[in-house]
Image (cartoon, rainbow, N blue to C red; front, side):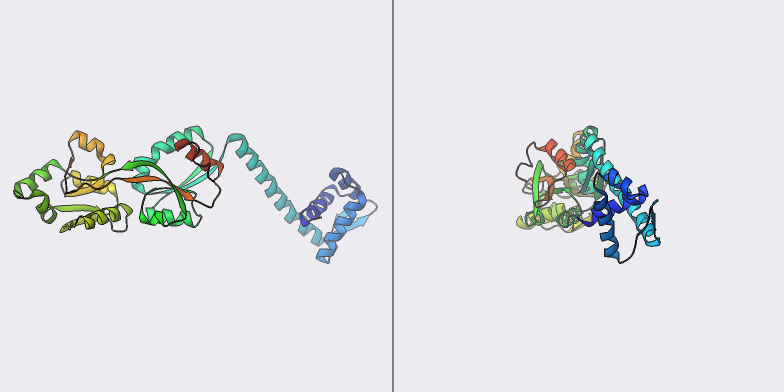
Length: 304
């Protein structure tokens, strides 16, 4: 008989105040109850009960053990109730990591639909860099991450489920572009690299690293640049005419349609890249996570 059973028998005896009553409640014999309590007392080298013809009373150590068991068994009951409630309501939890940019422009619509179908799931969302999200996924601190495909991801222990392609483009305000055309009359695409001010994300950003690799392959070097922490700032800075911003085209579609921003061609277009959800290969997905990814690609977990 394992220790948990011994504790349960002792706890029941203490509750009933009588070995025979505890035996009836537990559907075991009186000798089996007495033997179990004796084994527990032997393990502590201390009496836990005072036995008499009228029943049993707890010793000082018995009262101490009983109080601790009462707390422990209450916690177990609460855990069982939580599991039952989760099964009944389809509840659970899901921890995700995402950059502020992808959260705003990509994740929110997915979350809105998911929450509508799974209102009892507790979602924990960490807004952080893609590098931090990948590290957290590898360490088991997160279940799921919305990230851009990168060299770091390719060398990780993560599965990647792409959901869409994105296109990095250069944009600026119409006024800024007109002023550049006025100043640069001969080789516009060449001189813009030395005369224009480029608005870029910080160097530790995955998008910036992707852009830097493209520019290096194309032999492009920019002379003047302003670095910022978020793509929203890039868009705002470009809109007010501070320079040429490298942004994700899908995120400025409205600005391009309204004419508040214009695309500015810089030699060869930047190849498209993919964004998607990453998750550990080795971890078994929770029900909440499986339900989320099943909305994106039915059967995507068939390999796990």
